[in-house]
Length: 398
View 1 (cartoon, rainbow, N blue to C red):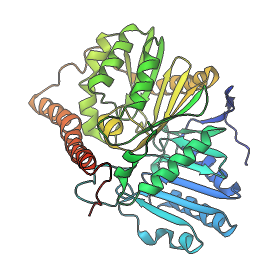
View 2 (cartoon, rainbow, N blue to C red):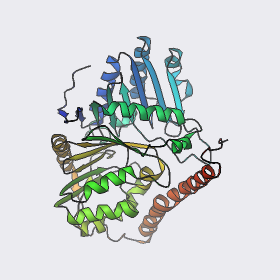
View 3 (cartoon, helix red, strand yellow):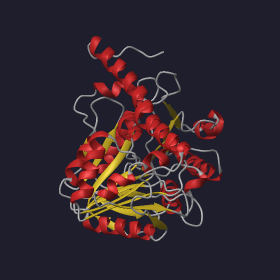
């Protein structure tokens, strides 16, 4: 593999990590890994955009396929909207597989594969918030969105491969068949220090929430960098409790967002968190898209936001890593980002100014916490009820 300039961390259970604190560094590390691949590439992404960045990935995978490397892609059908099916024709002619996740049907369009995962040679995996598109290929300050990720070797890789293959198996019109896999709680422990946390649509999910709730219970130092912050229900309660009892509870949220309406809804929560002792900062130079939580010596990183869609509707993937050294490195990135942020004054978002702002705030909260979630839960209920009626054998979707 190519040498990686980022700091190296390891855990006692046999894992090694590299921390990539910008989108440009993360995408370059992925491209370097693809260029050095000898046997297999598994790439799963929500967005893959026809662009200079997309061409670099496509060309690197095409070169690998010419070397005899087996290439498999899982791409979300909605996230890659507008990407021609012919975009990968040269790659497919060399034997690569391109799988389109959950092709759009009116009943199930909402359930998307929001995961970002690359596994090379069954040995190294990359997980983070970056899609394959130009806005992720910058430093998050002078250009490009603020994002990044982590690469890992060790026992967890086999669990990530298993998760990838499971996604490939249900990608067409079989997304509900994942319910029938017994023993798959979504919490895959690769050792004492590293776990994979998988979320999917359903009424009885919550491994990410469950893990986070346990870690927050006695947390003293919490740093959360979150692109879309709109916790509801039990997730909101556990975060508010942690803000009250932790020695330090800091939120880094977008000052600029690619979804302005969700930012309007998120700001309505600021007062409640500030009254319980939370510090809130908004990142200023570029759009903030990272999803990283640091709870004492535990780091969560991956594709999931703290919002209803990530927690209840999308397919998402997170790593939970216990490592004091990695947590320290992640905090240094957090502190660096704070230097490019503005602290939100207490009470500045307590009351929206003007009738139009009040309407926008209420509308935003309704859309993201009621409408979107409600529609998705309606179809989940119908599907799970149908599965129970047919004895666990789900009828084909048309």
